[in-house]
Image 1 (tube, helix red, strand yellow):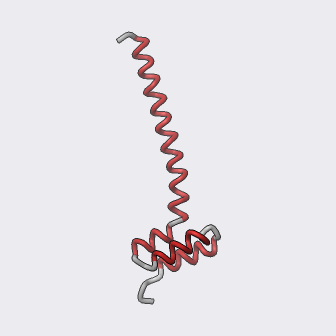
Image 2 (cartoon, rainbow, N blue to C red):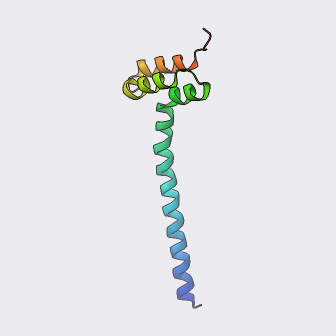
Image 3 (tube, one colour):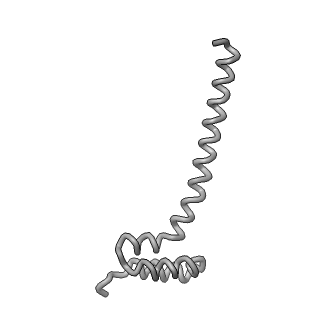
Length: 81
């Protein structure tokens, strides 16, 4: 291979690495808030504790801090109490 071809391949690899890093950052920026928003639902699913009701509450009213905290407390509450 010539030096020019080698240079082009290195440039393409560098551009691909940058694109992959940017996409990973965008993915992280998108997934972290979604995971945080649906944390009560995730906890309820793992604990098998009124998952459907908590998901509906979290989905429709979780954008308010009050109902997000209520759904989190509900998800963390024990089934027996």
